[in-house]
Length: 336
Length: 247
Image 1 (cartoon, rainbow over the protein chains, first blue to last red):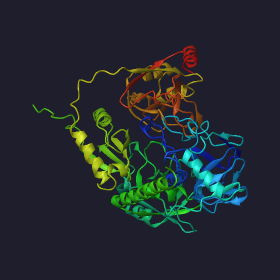
Image 2 (image 1 turned 30 degrees about the horizontal axis):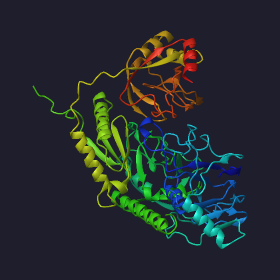
Image 3 (image 1 turned 180 degrees about the vertical axis):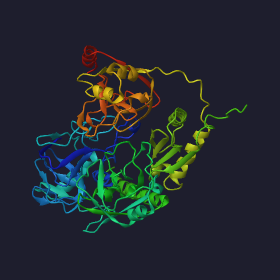
């Protein structure tokens, strides 16, 4: 039920929903940069939300399916093709053994997620299959995929197999067939050359910054510099200054924390963030916007918009409700 | 004579604030102290026993305890303000902490360290900076019982309190590109043990053959916040022996 990695792409890793429960031992959460997209891809192939799939970054891999699979791609549009023909996003796709998935230019966003019905079957480490690159654990031998790797997969679930047969049965002779239906969910990220708006609430040390820096944080654009990775985005923009040089004691930080080192250039912490940090935290991105944030490529620009904590909860709960409704609808129609 | 009625009476007042829409921080002042640490430890233990639906995990630090929650579950699908639910839960636990029991003395964890030589390339530099003989640096470093205030920075990396002030030495101006796991270092007034091979600027005075981070085990970190430890000087032979024994 495996698939072969012919070319690895820039940074392709196995991620599930994340490694929760060990942050007090200093073990980072990892998991997808765009949690919404991985979850959507999983739901569309009938997987539980925490099944392991591939996180594909900017330059995608080339993958040959060595068995029949039901797959779904969600997130960025990286010009995916199956056997040379354009592969749509956000649809379950029945693939026959021998088909080859490839990627081209990044058209919108920069991270896309490949889910396999039945999930990938690498062993869980500390309760999660997510790749933790620095500690070299989880995923496939704790690292990004390489050419020649074989991805172990369970193969489609019984419901996935039924949908696979149904789709291919409609078009005999085809190597692959995408479902014609797709979910009525709002696209989680915007396109275009303008700065992406990222909503945030004030961070715990917001008041330590000068009024001018507070204003600039909400008003000015920031560039996502090339020194940005799964640990964090280093931003360039107006310098953010503190009123005092008082040291901050190390404390917990989380996905979306905007911390400001002495240089004044903010860093937004992402999926592989450390568990604790000692820099003042000027803002905290709302979880409903993690998906948007994950899709801003290096060289892209963003702007922070202030919202209240109750607004942050409203949007987070709304997103959760949408995904749960979709999961129920899919379960009723296809995956019971 | 006034008698404290609760273990929290003598502490700075608790502040509670959100860290985004899925975490709440409880903070007790902004000074590192053993009393604050003990209260946060007790609060963590209370959470272990009085968990609530939607609690993901919690992370203790010097003066804070951060609680991660699932807003969907805690709010009961949007019926309640999840931040308030968690904050009230934490406050009630804090005000009902069991009075500091004549805490049973925890065993002190011994960390064997081979000081100097190829495992502690900066021992001479620390000796020079502090004006102490290398043997005196080792004696002072192995003397105290250190308290593990928190684990952070890297998996299993302990933030320790208790290093003698005479040993304070600034970080290296140019961090090493790769510090081997197990390296014992000094950075300013702090001492610590690298748990993973990482870049780092601490002055390396020795190395332990123990593994501080063991992901294959059920408990991935050798050390936990609240534990006490002591460094024990060992010879290079013992280091090699323990290393082969450990792996």
